[in-house]
Structure formats: C-alpha cells, structure tokens
Length: 220
Image (cartoon, rainbow, N blue to C red; front, side, top):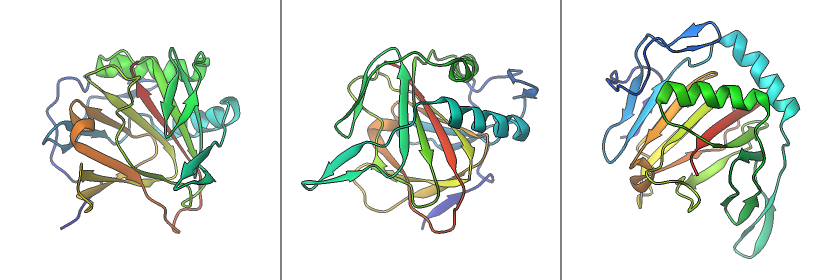
C-alpha cells in the first residue's frame, strides 16, 4: 500500500541534523523526520527556512540565476527537458547526456550552500538548480549517482515555492513505495547509500499552477 508522508512520520534521531543552527532568524532546535531508514537514510526538515525568507529567496534566485532549457534524446526523438535548470559548482556536471559547465556560485547561492553545509557538517561544492513553472514540469524516475560525484554520495535538496510530491521507490521496482510533500522552505537530505538502492521523481500534476525552485547540493 502506498504511503503518503506529509509531516506525520516518526521522528529521526540523527546527530547530523544540527542543534542550534540558524538560517537568518530561524533556529533548528525542533525535531527532523526520518522518511527512509532501509538501505540508506532520508530525512525531512519541514521548515529549514521560514516563510518570509522563502519568498525573498525565491524571487532572488529566479531573477539572478542563469536558467536554461536543454534538449534531450528519447527513443531517437529530441525533446526539451520539462523544466528549466542551471548548474553552479567547482566541477563540470553531466546528466541525461547534458553537460553543464562549472561556474562560480553567486552570493545568494553561496550563502545557502554554507548554511546547509554547516548544518549537515558536509562540505558541498556544487548545486543543480531546477525551476518548475507549474505542475506540468516534472523530473522522471532517477538516481543521483553521476560519475562526477564523490563517493559516498550525499544530497541535500532545498524546496521553495509551490509544494510538490516527491515519489520514492526501490531500485528495480515499478511500484512507488511512498511520496513526500516537499513544502516551501523544506530540506530533504539523502544519505549514503540511499542513491544505490532508491529512485525518486517529481511527477506531473494538473493541480499545481504555481512555480517551484529546487536546489540540490552535491559534492564532486
């Protein structure tokens, strides 16, 4: 039976999800929820950034980042990816046969990167940014296991704007195990060896008409 997670799963007891850390005026002293504990771990922080800061950060990212929509080949036919994206980091990054050249993070991204790195005690040096214009923009089933990434793989994903469901399924399976509602200002952390055993997606939906920005921080 499909499990839907909003904020009612059991509490995590994970030392890496910091105590007393702050982003602006927001502190992290309340509990974080554990979503996956089998074959890797996945944690969810419902309000890593508070609402007012989310709104201003969203607008700044949308206006300042170098958004682009690249073509991909599917069964010999060319399509545009169903979202806009951009890459910032110390290394080139490639996925779905798209190569994104390294470029220095602007100050707005660097501030977020530093806060998340300090919070998780993991030094990230790259970020893939996705802009979903509405519910028709999506990201299919995949694992974040590109060869450019340092092993063990740790991914931190910050969501801003419209709430979207994050689907999860075991690698090699076709049935979705559960879905997590990614709220505005939330942080999802996928710890090693999660990417070896689980796939995830952002599915299309007709219910969403607003924009969403997702920042996924990585190490390479």
